[in-house]
Length: 500
Ligand code: NAD
Image (tube, rainbow, N blue to C red; front, side):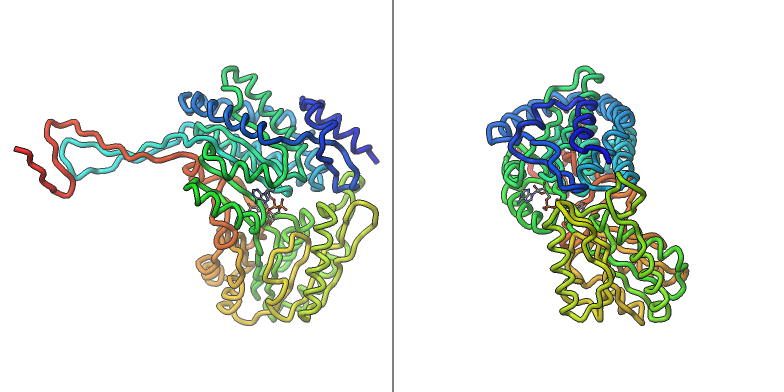
């Protein structure tokens, strides 16, 4: 087995992270792979935050005057640097967040993909021209940079979420201040070092265009409450969003909220069951159930229920659980003890509500928390099924009627991702129209979105959209400009105001 502390140090040195940032600090950083401490990270204080926001404000003022395609060049260089650093950063994601290597690599690939997307976008920040009712006038919409963009991110996508926001925000002409999860500070420091390498190659990017603030909830709150921050993109639990949203609203700041999910899959009688089994298994057990898009509720049609459950049980019993650096496993650790305890509480509540639990027990002991994913046969959508528990628990329920099950599917507070497995196009279309989630899929699972689409969800998931499509508009402000090139002054709506 590799020595995690040493390997972490090697990667951070390789990526050029200043040792002062992660040795001798007050915040211990632990790897969920073993529970051991791998660094002691320096946290920010109020003066650091104030200085960062001051510098980011000045950086914004300079950066907004740089033509957007030139701003795209910085993100092109960032994509290049990420390609070079991919293996190291991916391994650090595994060490710090516990993802299996292919998912760690996938996360960095997502950063590269969004850089590519943002480079193209830097030449496509289009506005409209609009027909005016007044002769000799022209009306148009112009998009301007917004200001300092705050990013608050969760532990389970420790670097991709920053990239989704930062790549777009920077080509749009903004500066970025990032408060990563206190559970994953090292990947954030590494990402910042990679950004700085790209900025050095770019040459004349203003200092402080991107900042990282290492700290806990208070550092996030400081971003939320500071009038210099024009937009906060906050990814995390619905509880966090409930605190952040009203504070941002209080000062009329913009918010992108990417909060919890309670994602459901329906498997219909006509489904390709092998496909469905693989889709559900990855969606429910992948990332040890710690994705916002993890499949948590499974609705099986009565006609296929028993056979499908039997196959799922076999998959759950045999899936490899363990340290992803030690062997070929598909399920890594939970992030910490608290996650394990929340999982056990949810399973106890499920049993009390009449559920039959398969799996869910701890694998191994010590300071790390590995679990066998849990499959829970539930009599109905009650108790813990209604909430997100950030762990690998899949609640399975039986259904008879599509309309009724879609209603049940929608009858939870979150609205992030959803899927149906069916080969009946009528069923598929009915589901796509009726699902109340931001993401609705047919014949693929709930997790594993591409960067090209707008990502986010409805209801208690927060309503934000980031990444692809037209999400860029949130990082800009729209101005409607009207130009009168005539020598008359006709008023809109035919209003007359004749001074003579
Ligand atoms: P969390 O809510 O505990 O923390 C997320 C971030 O918010 C951290 O950086 C934390 O320091 C900060 N924070 C917490 N309270 C805050 C407050 N009051 N003000 C400002 N900042 C605050 O979440 P977590 O445990 O790191 O991540 C798991 C959760 O994130 C799950 O609910 C998951 O569904 C959600 N998530 C959502 C998405 C999405 O895109 N919808 C993506 C990833 C994770």
